[in-house]
Image (cartoon, rainbow, N blue to C red; front, side):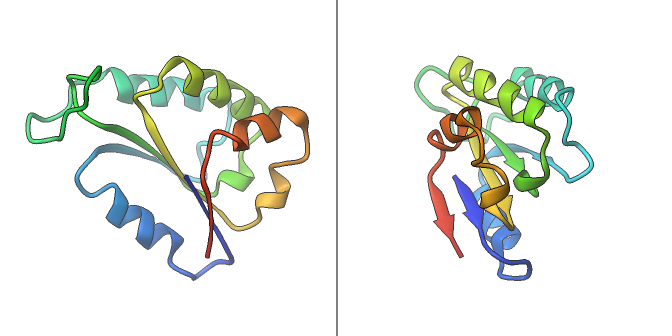
Length: 121
């Protein structure tokens, strides 16, 4: 899902609540390039705590990647992310964005956004 709205509306607070019982990795605004996919892959390979909820097909527990300021990511990152999402269906993504219109300009970006539920704040 992508939480969209102006700054200060509580998007990050909402995401913080949503990931509370998951094994999550928060990707900050300084990690926007294509090499960030390696960080996400490493998180998804690591073993989850036994207390985490498990899901069929994912014995390690629910993996979540939280992408802050998703509208500031590079086109190369978004292209790589789309491929990663297709290869890892058990990983959930929560993103926050102030301006979703910065993302949906190309056909590739539109294809990526189609994999998310967009929630306006």
